Length: 337
Image: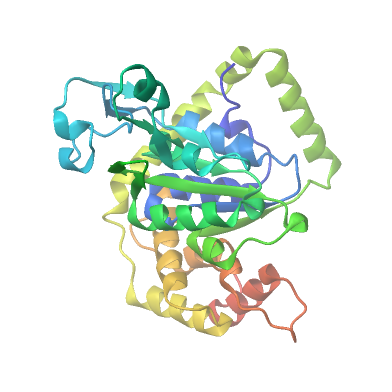
C-alpha cells in the first residue's frame, strides 16, 4: 500500500511546516516531534519522503551516492562508477533495541566464513544516506548510540574501526525524532542537535477528530483510491518544494531581521549561536516555500517556537512552559503579529 498522503494529514500544522522546511533546507538540522501517541508523527515522516521526487544514485552503491558527488568520498564509488538509476528518498527506522553493529555496520560474517573474505556489511547509517533517519522514542535511545549519532550527524561521515576493518562512508541524512515527554527527557547533547522541535497534541475539537478518523478509514479501506484522490494536491506540493529549493539561494536576509533574531535569542538566554543560525535558516526556507524573495519579521515570528523552544535554559522561577516563554519573548521583541 502506498504511504498516506502528506496533504491528507489533518491539523498538526507546525509539524508539517517543520518537515517541509527540513525538506527544502536539510542544513536546518532535522526535526524533533514530541507529543501524544497516535498523532501522526511517523505517518508524516513517511508521507513526506514519499512526496519528494526520486533521487539519482549510483547503481549498486550501498550508500546511494549521487553520480555527481566526489567518488573518493565513498569506498564503493572510488573503485569506479557504472550506471545510475532513480530511487525513492530513503527513510530508515532506527529501532530502540538496535545494536551498534546494526547501526554503523560490521564485518560480513557470511562472506568471512564461506569465502574467507574480509568485507563490510553496511548498517542503518549507510541506508539512510541522502534520506531520513527516523528515531521513534528518541528520548529512550541508549547513551552510546546517542554519542555515535552526534558524531555522524556533525560530520556527515560514518567511520568504522572494528574487527580488522577500517572504513569511512558518507552518511548525510535528515534526523527526525519523536517521543512522548512523559516517558523521559532527551539528552541535552542530542536535543541541541535537532534544528527544530515541535509539539503535537491530540485534537480536542469534534470536527477535527471526525475528519482524522474518516480519512484514515478511507485510506485503510482502499489506499490506492484514497492516494489517487490526493494526487493533484501532492503534485502541487511537490512542485512547491522543488521551486523553494531552487529559490533558496536567492532569498535574502536583511540585517534588521538578523538583529531581531539576535535580540530574540538574547531575551531567551539561549546558549551559543546555534539558535540564531537555525532561526535564520528556518525563516529563509519558509520564505522560499512561500515564494518570497526576502525574509521578513513575520517569517521569524512563525518559526521562532520550533527553532528555539528546546534551547531554553531551565528557570526555576518561571513555571510556564518553553512554548509560552518563546511566545512571550516574541511579543516583547518582535511585537504582536
